[in-house]
Length: 116
Length: 114
Image (cartoon, rainbow over all chains, first blue to last red; front, side, top):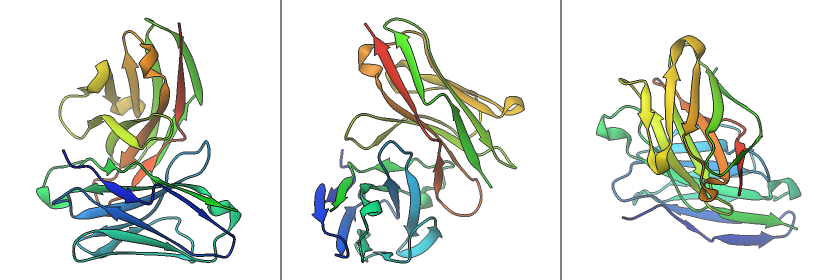
């Protein structure tokens, strides 16, 4: 079965550079979520999109922005990178229009961002 | 606001022993509850979830969890631990209403001794 695809899997950047992470949800999933997981920490919700519109916002820094495109893939843009941005960034997707309660989020393998 | 508390950042059991990972939630209404497992350098995989109905939920790999409203708990258990169960386990909650985000607990790392 198709899973959530994230690219790149690994990314190394210098401070103050920019980075773009991509997420391709499972086909027919309409909602995408972004999470940040620091070393030894739990995933922290950043932002989500439902049907290409922002649906919820968490602890996403102003230096970060994200969008969902017409093909439902999403991109997380990160500018003015700081050392503290080094983390594993997960994308997840779900299908919210199915009408089922408690829809499961399917997680991608993550992008490991290292800021030097 | 919703929150999740996982008691014990590390749990160590012997192979074949009972696994018990504790999770308590805080929510004005019973939320949707999830347990995820994360193996090193991998994404999160759903073990099981509670939405409505039967309070004892069975998941993959022999895990199960029981939703206890009176105790606001959703503890994860497995009768007999395997070496392959060693991983990080996250309890998570999601609201019935408004927004789609999932709130994760701090995680519990399970060690399984031979």
